[in-house]
Image 1 (cartoon, rainbow over the protein chains, first blue to last red):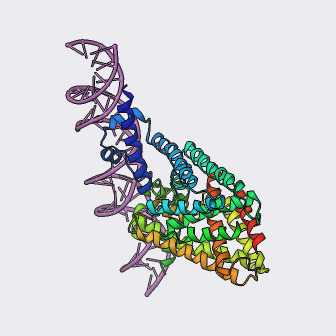
Image 2: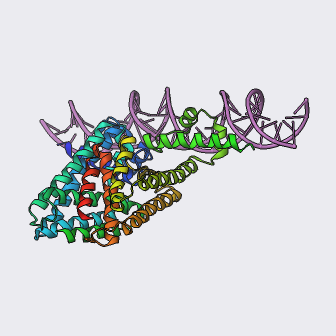
Image 3: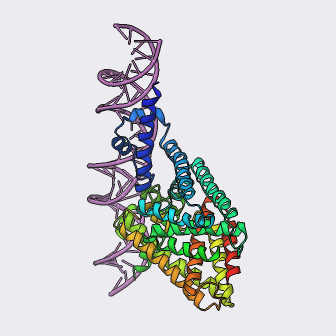
Length: 188
Length: 188
DNA sequence: CATTAAATAGACAAATCTGTCTATTTATAA
DNA sequence: TTATAAATAGACAGATTTGTCTATTTAATG
């Protein structure tokens, strides 16, 4: 199969582009930098992707998949259903530390390119919808105190994570995410 | 005084640049578009601002001021101290509607240019710190039920607003901000 | 009226951008 | 070995970018 080479090149492009898009931003990252750091030819990039926008879309689709897999794998390790809810905050805290507090990559992509390309907005919406529904499932199985209803608690957790990650990107620290964790602890 | 003309030109530049920076993004907005839509000469722009980055910083400083003035004016209209807390959500909801759900302009600027220019990060941090401390003051004077401590409630409100505004920019609706309002209502 | 500061129009440089294209080399598979 | 597909290097076009500079006009002030 010749697919092997093609796949390797495709992955190198998406990985490099994604890393640069996140760190520098979409518009501040040139195709020439991508091909240089990915160590591939320009013609190869345009054989695999029609345009820079297409590359962004492919990056977000791959990110949606890898993001969710990592999250699910991380939460599955916890057995106690209430602890799973709290682990969501630790997971996002750890991810932000790993990402040097650059914020949520979906939100970042949407802020810069979501208005210009509808496929980007759609991909971000799907990822956030996915996050919401996963939290809902965890809440439904958590046996929490019902201070809030299932839907209310799920929405609260979702909003505090979004707010916490965003705030982490401003102050470059995870204090707010940890405060949010403590607050949820009081409500479950 | 010849300041009058200068001030008018400066304001036209900042207003136009700010509008375009918010709608299209910083890197997607060219100086040439700014001078054309502001209807001023390029030499005038570079007489008032050393660089495009400087223009961005000036825009954020002005925004910090006008944002806070508008917020304070809006909240002062409410007399009941608990209602003031809830009015925060309505204020941000109305602002997002006015802005066509483009998200928080400070977060947007920070996401795109905060890593490249430390003055931008600093300005955004100051604005968010300002928001936090204003919420704290309102909470301290609210006479809430103390289900959460003052600091905890203030942090919760702050995070839910950040999360709610961010989410509004994804789903292009204010449902999450209104849900957040109802949740806070239960806690005060 | 005369002086001075401010704003204008627009050419220009130098770099960078995306995307296309050609010619060549590499690697795989039959 | 031979045929085929994939990847390479890099020139190139055409548009756009920020920022500088010159020459001219406008407007306010003494």
